[in-house]
Length: 499
Ligand SMILES: *[C@@H]1O[C@H](CO)[C@@H](O)[C@H](O)[C@H]1NC(C)=O
Image (cartoon, rainbow, N blue to C red; front, side, top):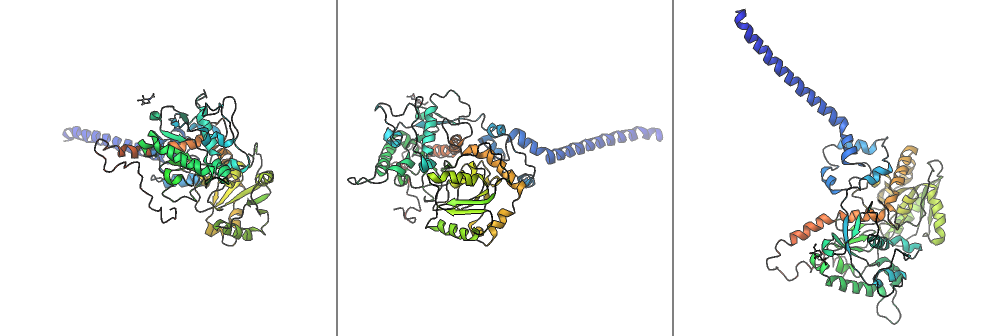
């Protein structure tokens, strides 16, 4: 019996040994995967996919698809958001995400100089449309005009793309054949046109600003480039809230570059279609800022104009709530040229800087605060922020709802509850992100000009999708004449009193 059974026993034990081994190795692999999941994920995220996942969400489209904050791992995310030891990415990490990016191809109309450089008093030779910026760059008028000078910096960057040999860090290049372009840039200096030329001459019916806008509409709508896209791939800069007031009702299919949407009906401009650009700050940069929580004596700083409209009410209320608080500087009066150095000193020596909605949701106060490394406290429920799809402002700004800010002691208690460590973390972030808000010529990698081009580039895929779809039946007779060009009136047109 024993002898007859022994082979089968041996067989059974061999089988069970094998399955035991199998189970053991499965368990081993599973436990290993578990360890990887719990400890390894941040490594994948930080080093391969998202070089700088904490600060800039995602910089390029490929990664955009593969990572979304709502992806089944809320614990990892929320813990990294409040992690006390958030390591600050080095400057290299910040710009890393721009490498290997596809460069935006931009065609720029050769608009007559009266639309651009002549508005800032450049006198051409009558032959060339553009100044020769290799020899001399015309200056933009200084003072408060500069805060809306975005039109100028973008145009200069495109002009310089013809001869700049350093492609490094460039997010857009100028192409001379519009068929090869991703977008079409309209070089109208609308903000300076509004600021300088909106008063009518005594003997003229309209102001020059109005006339230029009429001419622009006539010019654009006659162009092949406009017709083939219905204007959708055109970039028009209208950073001053009152610039382009007339033309925008006819040019609204284009991508506008704006400071906010405060004075726009939602169908004329919105966050899906358009790009929000920072103001150019008027406060001087805090170079070599070695200040800290204790060396900035003022807790909370506000200096701004008082408005008669809604914004003025909030500012007034906050003034009464804060005026007797220790270490709070709160005063009215807009920053004029002579006040700039005082305001610079004030912001450079404050821990927190208030940004309260004025007559528009945005103001350059925010960008002054960033340049001063003064942690912005934003009280503006309708504000839209530049590049917010890739930049998490909560890491270096405090947001307070207006309704909360107007509660007794709410704001001051909140500010006082932010202690040295947390403030220092935000201050360090401000130093990292400030370059994203710098306008300069020549533009440098990762500055405001490049960030705006990148924001425009992110608008291109949905535009192309719409255009391609609209061409599906181009061989069939059109349903209506010029269906694409004759854009229907926005729904809110009449209701919003724009007619
Ligand atoms: C512009 O580009 C298109 C498409 O690449 C090409 O067919 C056309 O010939 C080009 N035009 C000129 C003037 O080079």
